[in-house]
Length: 103
Image 1 (cartoon, one colour):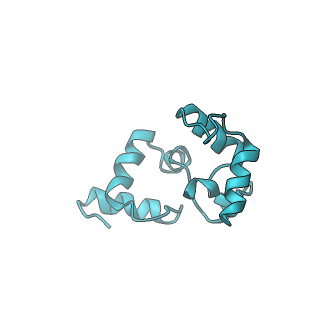
Image 2 (image 1 turned 60 degrees about the vertical axis):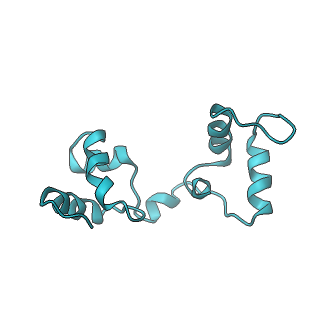
């Protein structure tokens, strides 16, 4: 579950609940329940600013950097989505895509 490193426990709980999943006892997910599962499996918690420190961008942030739409970024990264995208690799990915090459 990579989502743990991208979102807080509260946000993960909200996503799980929105998808309609319940606990084994049919209870809604809470940040505390997500934290308990995460800790039990030795998964590190999300830390505010961690994604930025790794140089990762959201699709919206990438669109702003490249001055294109959200949809255009999704089209650009689809052929070269082999791992985390960082700010430095996005322009090269766009260039490669425009030349008909995938990474």
